[in-house]
Length: 229
Image (cartoon, rainbow, N blue to C red; front, side, top):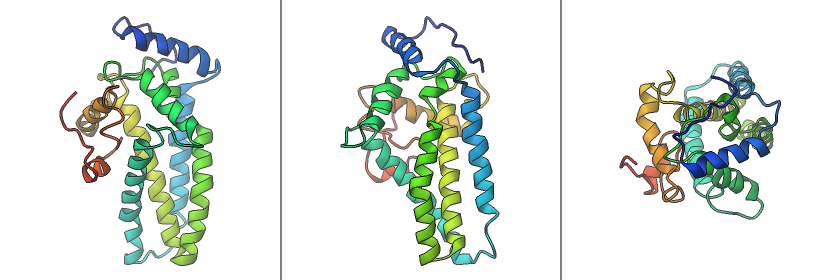
């Protein structure tokens, strides 16, 4: 995908205007979307493999850490998206502004695809935020689980959380690729994309379809909207 946006006359005027303003104000001249994606999936994948290599003689009960961690990650995704990303909370204003104030103005249900790789700046998590999140939360949790249960459980928790994050980033990016892109045409992406497109309707974004990956949290808490937008 090209690093330079190609002008599109199909965009609604407010979206086109906001994208131009965002690119001028928030995307540095040296930013490369391909490098951003490579960091996310390349470094993330390498750390995931490194975690798995630490496992030693995993016991059957220890493998339960994987499904439990994935459910925990899904609910974390749900509540994090439903509340601080769509409602202003003290101390989390930056999260709210970046998501509801920028991402949802850059992409609406009428203008979902990126126009160039530079638009990944409005799509993928910033590398510094990824490092901060896993450093602040992942490392302490590893020590707690290693102390309470075992090192295997701790490594499986971190690996599962990282795998979920990479899955999240992959699906979210694929939803916002042009529909003709090979990744956007995958069956799983096509099946889930319309749920996310409905969420990007400005009238609905604070009310439904907060799971960006699999709608477990939305199903459990009654915020799943199945109708196609």
